[in-house]
Amino acid sequence: MDSRLIAFSRLLQIMDELRERCPWDQKQTFETLRNLTIEETYEMADAITDKDYKSLEGELGDLFLHLVFYSKIAEEQKAFTLTAVLDGICDKLIYRHPHIYSDTIVADETEVKANWEKLKLKEGKKSILEGVP
Image (cartoon, rainbow, N blue to C red; front, top):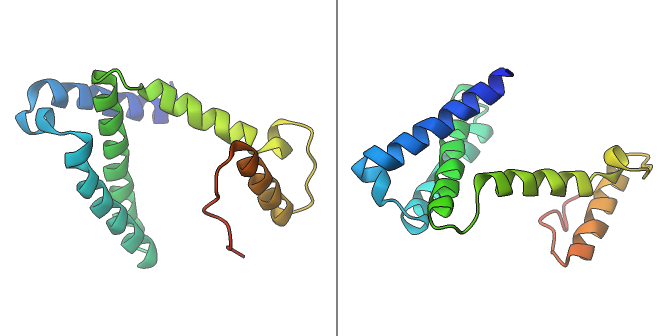
């Protein structure tokens, strides 16, 4: 098995065990994790700014934990599943990259970005990339 899948599976197993057996982890909710996630995101941004790639590695791990944690809570509440989250982002990436997964032809990164914006507008979403040169 791909080492990435093994590592991800290990994280999922650990999260299941923590939610089952750790009093602190059992009490966490979307709301209690929110500020911690924001803090971790800032720490990741700082590591990028500082070009501290060892710290970035750790901060990415912290964010993976948070994403798995939110998904675990959602599964417990029957709101959504981690599988749905992952399938959703895969479907979105395929849809928004027709130059890779369909017959759209692009000349450069500018055309990729323009297509991305058109597809977002079709979805009725405002892009975070608006105004970015």
